[in-house]
Structures are given as C-alpha cells and as structure tokens.
Image 1: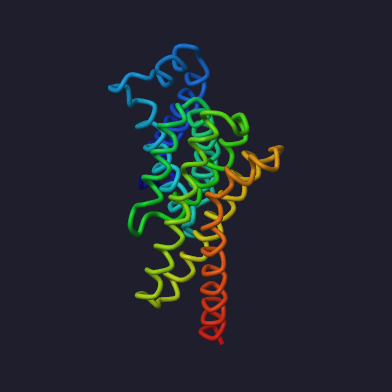
Image 2 (image 1 turned 90 degrees about the horizontal axis):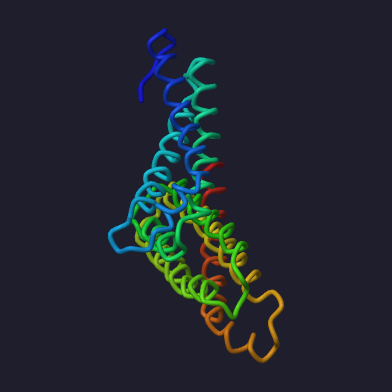
Amino acid sequence: LSVDNTDTSLSAMLTVTDLISLLVESLKTSAALRVIKGRTRTNTLGLQLWQHLMQFHADILDFSSNNELDVVTMKFWNQLFRTTQECLNQVQSILPIPHFLASVLSLLKEKDGHVGLQRRALRLLGERVTYIEQLPSSEGTLFLDVIPDLIALLNEKGMDEKRDFSLQKRRRSMVLHQAVLVAVEQIAGHLFGNRDRDMLMEESSVLVPCLKSICVCMTENLKHIEDISNASD
C-alpha cells in the first residue's frame, strides 16, 4: 500500500481498518466457527485466512517501520497492526490444531523467510499449546511431534551460518534461534507440567536431542555476538 495524506487516501485507510474490524467480529460468530473448524479435506478456508493474515501482519510491520511516514499514516498502520493482531488471535484460536501446526511448520521451513513472520508464528505456537490438555492427550502428542522439526530447524540454520558470514544473516539467525528455543520451552513446560516421573522419562526422550542443539546454538551465537561487537568498534 502506498498512501498519502489526502481525502481519498484517508477514506481508503478508514475503509481497510473497518473491513478488518468487521472480519474480527464475524469470526466470533457460530457460523464462522463451523466453517473454520470444518474437518473436510476440501475445507482450507480457515488455513488460507490464517496464512494470508500472517503475511499481511508482516507487511504491516515493514510499512510501519518507515520513519518518513506522516502522523496520520503512522496512526493508520499502528491501528491496522492492532486490529490485524486481534484478527489473527481469533483465527488461530479456532483453527483446527493439525492445520495450525502444518501452517506454522511451513512458514518456519521457508528458506530466507520473513524473520518477523517466523517469530510471530513461533509465538503463536507457544500460546496455542497452553490451551490444550497436558500429556497424555491426542492434541498434546501433536505438539510433541513438532519438537523434532524445531530442533532440525535449529540445526539447519546453524549449518547455513557456516556458509554465510554476513552480520545481517547472523543477527537473523540469533533472533530466530531464540524464538525457537522459547517455543520449545513453552511446549515442554506445558505438556510435561505435572507428569509422573516414570512416564515423564519416557515421553521426554524427544527433548534429549534438543540439548545438543542448544549447546551448538550457544557456541555459535556467542561467536556471532563477538563478531558483531568487533565489527561495530
């Protein structure tokens, strides 16, 4: 979007904000709930809406970071950011868990994906797990199955950094590593919160590979911090 402070652009900005607000209210209805929670193979409307909103949310972050925007336009982007945030929260709370997890992993596995979008997806992942039952539960198992993918993501990003020594790439890697580890902590903390010791030892074995990845990430990130500090001197 490219807007300036004219009557036409102001009208367009208000219309966009109103439409997103209307979408938020519509998502709260029982009809929207039935559509998005539909479990037929052909029903991907809710998933597509979530993905488009995530991309739109990332675009808003990019636009709003422009320091040359006038006051009216900046207020528009800030309001649109808050409204879109509310809409995202509403969609992700009712999106079927298999669709939600598949979409999050798809975003995270994109090569050179938008780091803001990936961080947001990881944050939503950590928030969503708090609304499900702890292990043993079918939904808990689905979230547990995501952890190896997150660990693999850490490892892949680490190997990529060995081939690309630009400071921008290193900063991006550090930010994403942190978001991934926070998500793993939230998932593990909720799913294993009050488990019996014997069952905990068996089910938590999926977390063991994560320890090695954490050590590798810490070593790499400390080196990155040192390099960034040296480059700024």
